[in-house]
Length: 309
Image 1: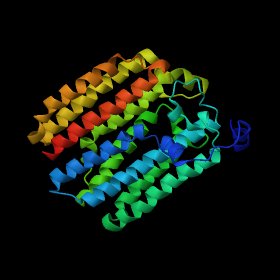
Image 2: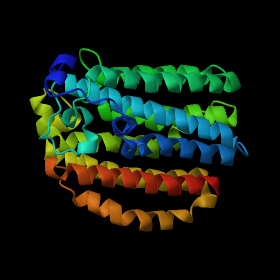
Image 3: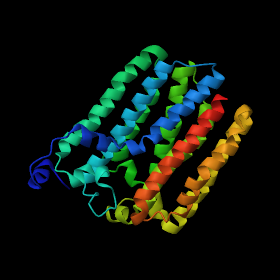
Image 4: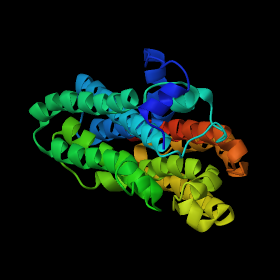
């Protein structure tokens, strides 16, 4: 475990600059929050006949702040518990506390700041849309803290993929749709199944690459329990289910956009093929995270476009 005092012993404390704060926010993971909002926008535009662009942008900023809070909390707790090191095959910009003598307490306050900023902006949404988004947001906030903090964080259990998928990929579209469309429709959770799978796979990519590291840190993630071979088999199955769920939802509920599915498959194939071949090992971690993030963007963008048609 590393404390502020131990951090200072590594050299003069580095101020938490805007550049380091942005690195902690991890923009490369933002597709996990951006794509669910775009899906909600597409659904609202189609089923409700329109939406407020201003409110859509506000929701997008709130979700990015929540994602940034998750990333920063995770980096902080992993570092103070000694789970992160320079030997974990991560980029320098993806391990601020490992490669910079930043006070851990400053990082903790930044994570809290992201969460508070999201809540304050959410007050505008609540004023416009009522208490339902607040209830959903509180569930998400609890999940944010429980994922990285506490005696037994959710990230140390074999449910991290499910929790992140349901919260980011399911609850975000549900809450955003309620705000944009003016009504709560639980069918949105069915329409959001592709984003639930896509966000869950971002987490599973990281956890599968980190099996050895997580075993040393006493983490019992799903890939740790399965082993890399079986984890990759499940991963491949979920990739197929991800694309199939998009095609199925569009075909059953939004057939006007079905023609876009051909272009989606063609655009996604190179990324999906490369990710399929990726061994999801420590040395290929950086490439795998880039591939799964890019695939989320491509599939999410085409899915959103198909919904809007």
